[in-house]
Image (cartoon, rainbow, N blue to C red; front, top):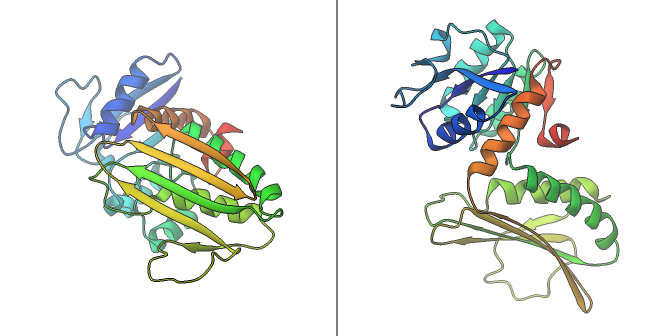
Length: 251
């Protein structure tokens, strides 16, 4: 049984994870952390991680980057592994997470979806062959109209993964307006669509002479991120210090 502290338990993803864990025989949320206590909370809720009295195997964080330092400091005191699902970390905070992983087991991923992480594995394999054959690579991501950042962190993670698989990294191009030239071969194009209530769609196009290969992932609910977080929590419990990704989780 993996015992979880849910940081950000009153938020949308916190509630989703609470529902998922309630139906999981191998996991249990023993405490939540949030400034607001959910009306139907099945576990004690505290205003800060430092106040939690219950013993646990791992903390899952779906809150805000603003509390990262406090979260890490308290986790070090407890020697507690962290699943960091929050997005929007600065470069300095990512460096802080990397440094903390020398003492703590940490999973951090731009996208907790198992499907997206399988897509990343597939596009890496495809890129090794197709890029060498001159195929152009384009990434198109679509999200709801309320999403503020563009391109998405997931689209950038896909592009980074493709570059990791190539002998020479390609340049990222986010905007071709004002350019009057043929498409260079050494670039990855990233395009963003914002509209309606799209949860998250990602298409990776390998465009070659007379053929196009598209590898796609469509999210119909944010529950997929919660499912990935629970799987990551089970994976991380009892692990040695280090910085892990969903690639490690899915094996």
